[in-house]
Length: 159
Image (cartoon, rainbow, N blue to C red):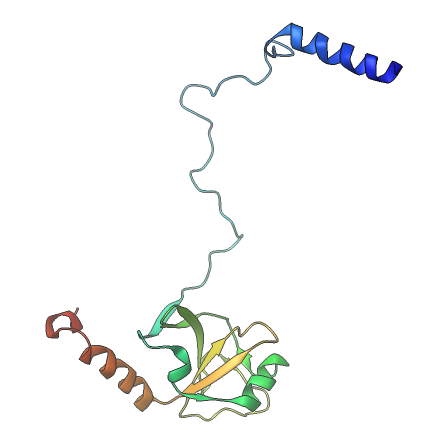
């Protein structure tokens, strides 16, 4: 009972005081004229990020792009077949961005030499154990681009 009355007494005194006052005159001063001398955008990383290039762009679903590589997907999950720099080269499909590595070795870490030199490898979730790899050839890439260009008006295909 005494705790309840003590609590009511404390809240009643705070309510009767009114709006909060500053604890001291210099507390929470306004922003000085001209603002603070801070950079507009502080760097998030110590060094700038490397350049990233979009190498494939298609409106199709990535599952229809090429051939699913089950063994390479297992090797990717074990980090034995992976991109050297994830997402340095990108493939943009319908709502999905995949990493790209080339079979001849560009952006590809392949210590067991499992890659076919003539294929292009697309990595979905390439930095996780749920890695999925789809392989395509340059011919598949042309078909993807032709199918995309055929569906657009003649003037819109050229940019």
